[in-house]
Image 1 (cartoon, helix red, strand yellow):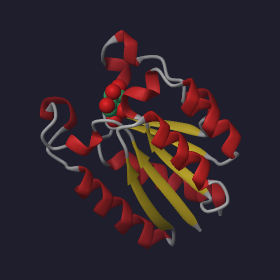
Image 2: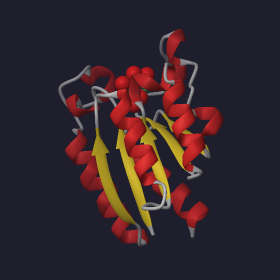
Image 3: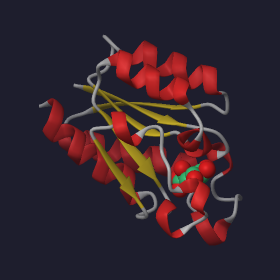
Image 4: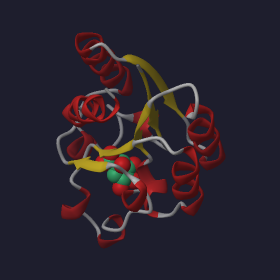
Length: 143
Ligand code: DQA
């Protein structure tokens, strides 16, 4: 089975970006960690990042029929995007929402998510480990 891991805007800057919040781990590190864990539990991993809302919508649309589930850190679009909400709904795929930081301990505007109502579940606050936890959760759903 195959999982698409999608990362949204500014996550390409991980490692340099607000290290006091996001730590020193880069997106390449997260990709390696996720691929390694996928290998251990027998899931094929495709990794994707875009800063554009429309490209994230395209990635979710494209996942239907090609992948069995999605791990999504939509970053700032989490808090704004009805388009991504609709794309998840249309895909019919199980989506696990991930955030590196604990969004609930941060600014009020990060407390609302357009993704959560259409996600199978949400993992936040555990840094890169969240992607590994999400893979385990998704494995249970799609196996
Ligand atoms: C984030 C949290 C979002 O609020 C923020 O806009 C991000 C990253 C996280 O992984 O903690 O860019 O999704």
